Image 1 (tube, one colour):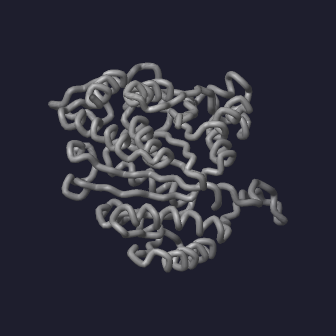
Image 2 (spheres, rainbow, N blue to C red):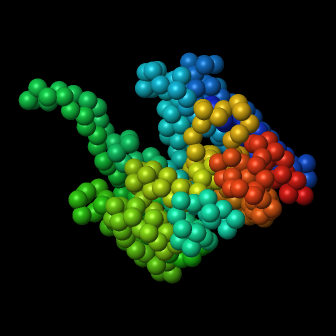
Image 3 (spheres, rainbow, N blue to C red):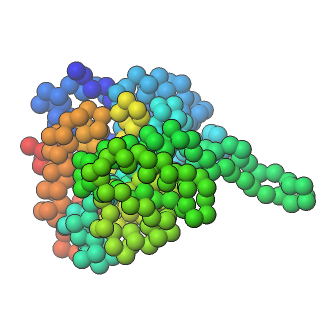
Length: 357
């Protein structure tokens, strides 16, 4: 079966990092793995070409694909566009269009990078957390929302935090399934003491837990979870939470690893079709300078092989190549330490491609 992969380079450093990820996948392709890549624009790149951040041209390619590999979107030149036309809306659009409801963000600290973390090495060395974030509900999508003048004549902004039972159940199942394949520990994060939406969330997660008796379920308020991620991150295995809390906690967890340039991300729908992208943004300040760290994008390609195509051995091969290159001391600028070998984006790609053989 041929793997049909839509490739969306996007904006900023997106094209540079995508190029390196494709070089790594092409190693597998040359060895006989059947892959087909179709490129399309998203975000600012798409707005420049089609006047919309997620145009019909891109929609057709993404809908027909088995998986989507994305670079990054956004840039300061688009900040003054009407909100529906901004690059980030392309990202929200593709998530909604493909029904991507589960975001998986691993935070893994390679032993060689323990010094790159802002926390003490003994606190973070050996860290391996998976954060599962619900992507399609919560306060980001709840209606009504907007700005208005109230009855007292004062301007106000308002949003709606809302979850349906079916939405909570399906993300809970994803998290429990992942926990079963890992350390059989799941922490559900909420703010049930003050938010009814998350009190409801907690009830549903507890009910779903009955189907997974082997998984040890715990609950934590989001403010405490944010603190515990800094204080003792290795207590966690899998964490599951809603859209807004997950947005914040996954970024916090990423910095435990020393660089957001190291972290992959997967967003899946109910058929395991996925959007795979690095956790970092488009970094317009270094775009076009061959300075970006391509590792997060390369690891996203490994996640694609694991979660959409069920090819664990190929995924591990890419991850082991990354480990090998880090172990011998190659570093892009964002993770560089004195005594290491500083390399460019393309040189890091060269090393990882070489380590694949």
